[in-house]
Image (tube, rainbow, N blue to C red; front, side):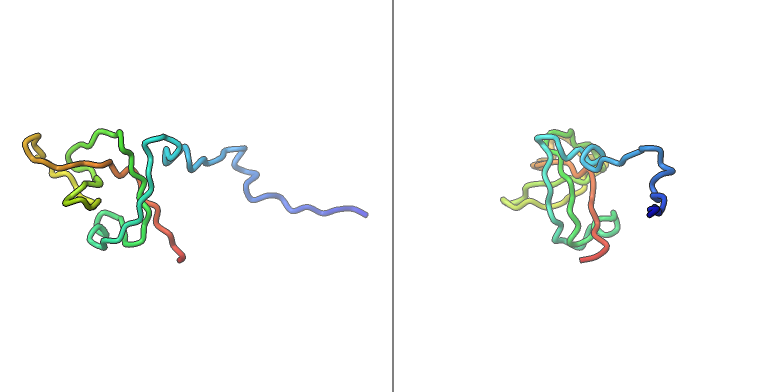
Length: 104
């Protein structure tokens, strides 16, 4: 009895594999995940319920989306373009990626 196999749709990729852990660098000891509760970040592509990847040791630069500690609470904040060292923003980490689920 002969077996019939259908070709894999991934055969044309030639062994190319996408490693999500490597792409998002979530294997680093300073990487954390946080779920977004605030809907104000939609214009930057971060929606309520999304999961953001936060790197604690990444240097925050003006324009970066960061997690800041304000009054003991961790919140998303964009560093101002003209951020000066005299402005006290307690940056907890830099957001490096956002994971948006298409289905609940």
